Amino acid sequence: MTSLFTQEVHLSKRHEEIVSQRLMLLQKMKNKFGDQSTERASLQATETACRRNLQLLQDIDVAEKAFQTKLTPHPQPEMLSLETRYWASVEEHVPKWEQFLLGKALMYQFQEGSGWF
Image (tube, rainbow, N blue to C red; front, side, top):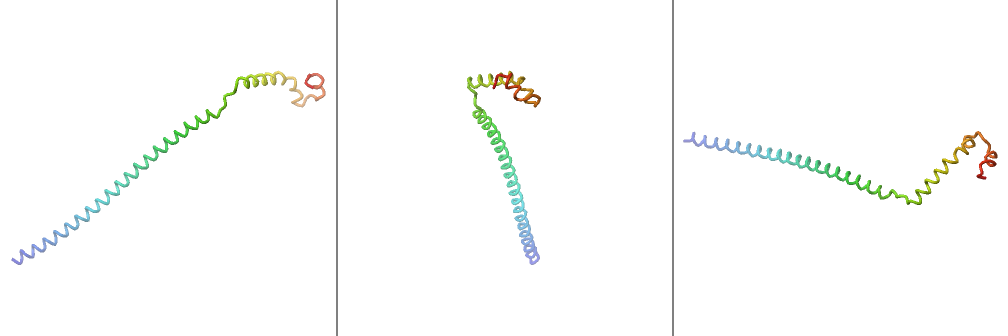
């Protein structure tokens, strides 16, 4: 009978050891699973932030283009006409002044013949 009692005590201690080991393993698994889910959540948060940042950059580009379009003044027809006439005048008179501008003619020669002075 003592032998059965001794066996019972021994089995009871062994059972406690196994249950203790089981609890430790369950805690390790829980910690590891928690770490994995934390890593997964962190990875998902990072991907979400990257998508959001990309969308923000695209929105900024669109806004910048719209802003640039609004900033670019549309010249009035009078200004366009004036600019066209100015450049036509420049193109007409450049050949007359070309020698002087290149330093090959004296100013007094142009004053007499150009009609500008």
